[in-house]
Length: 182
Image (cartoon, rainbow, N blue to C red):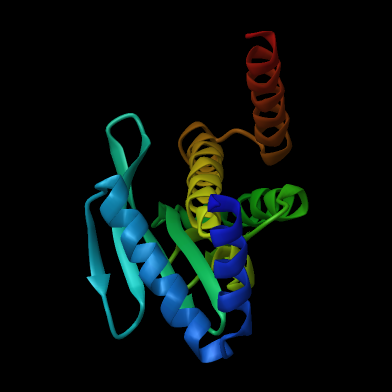
């Protein structure tokens, strides 16, 4: 019976006009944050949720979740006020990430000297599969932590971008191996 209910809900949601899609996914997003009991602020008119999560030991970052232009957006700063002498290496590291990432982009704002990670997903996926919102938020968070780690290595340890990427890929392979061994 539950399978039929889910199927009918998906059909109903899919035939609604696209203007209703944003409202439904926005409601689902707010409900997810309530259900998970995450601390967050809501900007209702902008369809924007702001929350803070730990990105490294004792370091938090503000995460933004927005619904606009028929997309669900996730974004966070991974570095702020980087040294200008590292600008070339910062662009190189961002390019490496952008070549590797399946979703999202690492963006650099040279004027304000910050680096952010931004993803967007068409609303149809979370509209038909409400659990997808949590998956998107989790993926964005996990990748943000990796990007943060990489840029910290560059900015504070002056590690070269190719070495950082190689170390990150090795770490991910080890994590993957450890998961399959368990």
